[in-house]
Amino acid sequence: MLTDLTIKNVAIIDTLQIAFKPGLTVLTGETGAGKSIIIDAVGLIMGNRASSDLIRSGEEEAVVEALFDISALPEIKLQLSEAGFDAADELLIKRSLSRSGRNRIFINGGMATLALLVDIAPRLINIYGQHDSQTLLKPENHLRLLDAFAGIGNLRQKFSALFGRLASVRDTLAGLERAEREAERRLDLLSYQSEEIAKAALRPGEEEQLEEQRLLLASAEKLGGVSSEAFDRLYGGDGALLGQLKRISGSIAELSAIDHSLQGTAASIEGAYLQLEDAAITLRDYASRIESDPAALQQIDDRLDQLGRLKKKYAPTVEEVLVYKGGIDAELDQLHGREQSRHALETERDDLEEELKQAGGELTAARIQAAKKLKHALESEAHQLAMKGAVIEPTLEQLMEPRSSGFERVEFLFSPNPGEIPRPMARIASGGELSRLMLAIKQVLPDSDVPTLVFDEVDTGIGGATSELVGRKLKNVAARQQVLCITHLPQVAVFADQQLRVEKLITDRRTTTRVLELGKDERTREVARMLAGATVTDSALKHAAEMLAAGATI
Image (cartoon, rainbow, N blue to C red; front, side, top):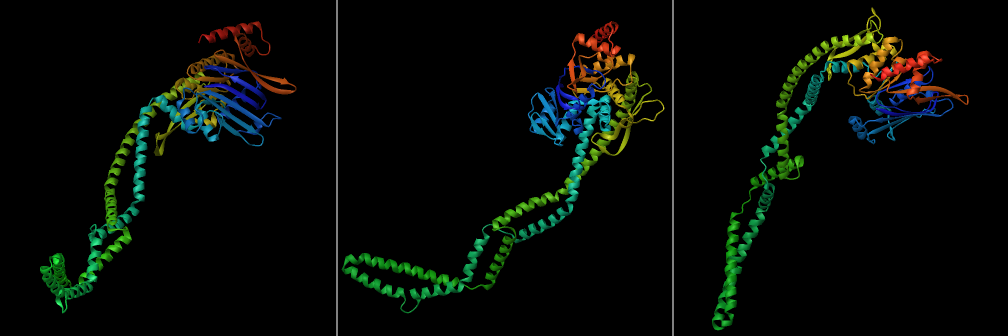
């Protein structure tokens, strides 16, 4: 609720501070005292268009500050927190206007944007007057009002959830369709790559083995020649080393028989002979196995070239090429499975469309039935509020495409006089009529998430018993929400929980406005003035006291 309002240098207001209380607050006073200026200041807090014409003559800047108690509004606190502002139980909104055109907005001390203010403020306070109603002048709000009256919140939530799921499935399908051509190209590419790698029949470690085999085959001539030559020198040719060593071994053996100290040497020479003999035989056998095989060498070269091409295309090593193939095979499985996924999504889409059609039909039927009842209820209330013969027609217009709210658009059409064709409220309803229509709606639909309501011109063109009825209805609304009301009618003012008198003063040849909260005696005199005019009689005072006493019992 709105707890405090401070206005500086706005029109004829110099400095004004007002503390508001819960319940019904009425602002009374002579015409031109500045009551409408206060409403204009509240409009600035709501994000209404700011004009330098509002700045008090002779001043460079105008400022409006409003303090709200938002302890019972967790969604507002959460939004403030997410936007980076302090989210305590109190919310201070400040708006300043300068003649230079530099207008600024502050929320809890931090600079804010007009967009954020326009989003938050209408959920804190709403003004109902000449083209100020945020509810009645915007047809998008009419559907919400009708649904609230019908009590079909659960059905609407069901439809909205189905609509959201259907939109998500359709978006996914659209994405699949957009990606279809690219997916086909990707499928062809990956299939070719997987097949190419599969045909190569790669084995881990194969490349190293091939390199070893290639080296052997490429060096066959050298290996055979050197090993044969080594055998000949050791064993096979004239003057071979083993023949000489055999003779030496025999000579040393004879000497060792004479000198036993040479026995170890003889054994060493004998052992060396045997080892060299084994080596020579091995070299002979090795040389006999070595053959030049150009065809086998070419096969190895071809295989290594194949591996090299695959490594150049896919990965640095054979092992990494195999890993790459595993990855593209997994992607291929996904691409091959997309048709199955697409079919499942199309089936889900068709099922959701059918569910949405059924839920939308139920929603439409409930709205049509509720619209008839709402028409009767609102017209009954309007007729009581001095709008005899007024017609209020909740109309349902079928949409070309459904929205999250349903298959239809709802707008309340209004005709203030019998015989006139009902038209959109923004085009035909006066400020007083809008205020009283909103008051009628508040009787039929008492629940609201806006904690503070401002009624301006609600008593325009009414009097007598109707005035008292308006006061009673305002009092009824104020039992649930804070209500501020500008009135010239004593029959309305007597129902107030708080009465503020707005006065215009002239000081040092400058006009200014002040606001006084009235006590019991002051309220009696103010109501008497509203009854009798400039000359307040004892009879008027007595009548005023009786009216206030009666209003206090409501």
